[in-house]
Length: 153
Image 1 (cartoon, rainbow, N blue to C red):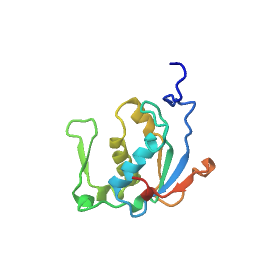
Image 2: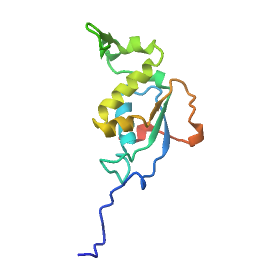
Image 3: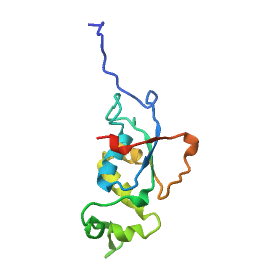
Image 4: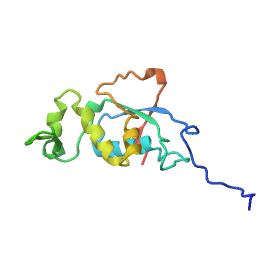
């Protein structure tokens, strides 16, 4: 059977077509936004998706400071981190993180990281995410196209 009319095509890093996309996060719920962004970064919306290859897009999130949490998560959700020293466990709520420099970036990265695969591929995929708190970004040279995140499932 050397004359199959179809073959399974597996993408590799040379054949992958990566694009740059801009997502506006204004009035988006954090979890729903991040699950769609994680799928974009992973490449799940592409027909040539291959699980073990970085075949997703580079995603730029603008207006990240305007994301919202549903319910009372803004004040009740707790992020835990550890300094590495005895008694060095630190707790923060999203409301506290928003007041800090780069806090909104940490909120979105934490959510997207949990939705990506664990291991070497997931860590590499997280480098394809760029978060900006305002409406301006410095990736204009890549000619990103703006997409409406609400049209994705």
